[in-house]
Length: 359
Image 1 (cartoon, one colour):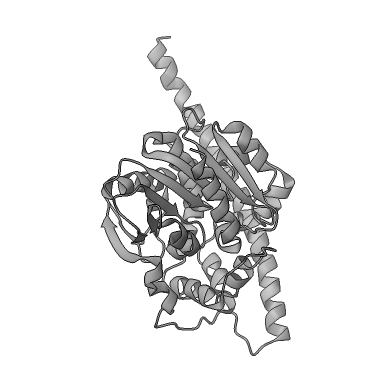
Image 2 (cartoon, helix red, strand yellow; image 1 turned 135 degrees about the vertical axis):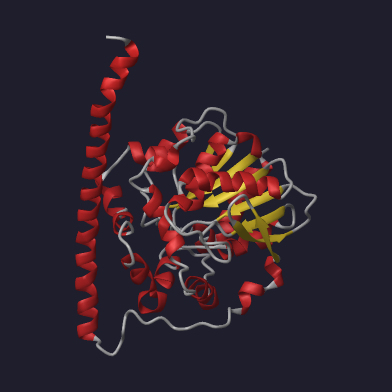
């Protein structure tokens, strides 16, 4: 049989295999998601029965932002129009100096970097961006707008729109997922990079463990519609205080006003759907990886800072990442939580200074 005909005959069976794989994955993920939904439902029923006067779904209306969000100590607010999305950012420092670009994680926004903005704007032009779907940036509808390759390209467009040839890239959590792939695919746009509390995604994917499976329970739950938004906003976003103060950081400076800033930002209509769509669009799906190299080849110097009290990522992946990624240093802060730049700002800033001075 002619080679082209043979290839044509094989396609239906290959397509069928992929279809079955997607169907099985969808069913397993939904089954686990519904199991966690059942557990959460039991929790809320118990809370309501023991304290019926408190309605868990009620969120306080916040018409006025807390003063910290407009504090000039953190710089000036600005916007930039990219190809298909308008991003908000806060910038401070001398624009003629090297760009230090801060990319936040979930559920955060530019304000997560407040302690680093004040510290590093002395020596760099610092820009803390709200990723698409977050904060005051545009919030496109639909899952396709949040594919990983689209998010990676947002960073490329942003650096060029800021009229810089490269940057020092500093990121955390989901921002770190994006940054890992950005550094691999656009190394010419990164002079150095600092990743916080996110080992290389390929290491996590290829080294599954029971511990990490249970630590990642929310990723299954977040595949469902509506319920994740309800869960995060329950009891007037009580979870923000619990998350941001979850570690044992001796230098933690997360204040009540800081937590109010998060509640104000994510309490706006529709403010949670875009961020959760990062999970719906990319976790358990590989479409967004198209065009992104999975293996690091040339990599600029990097630093991975990790809080050992992280409740979402297994610290054992740090050592594996150090072996996998060339030119990478690692720093584990034993008392820091997942939100390390807020929980241990002093230790994080010191680690960054030490790293940057070594080049």
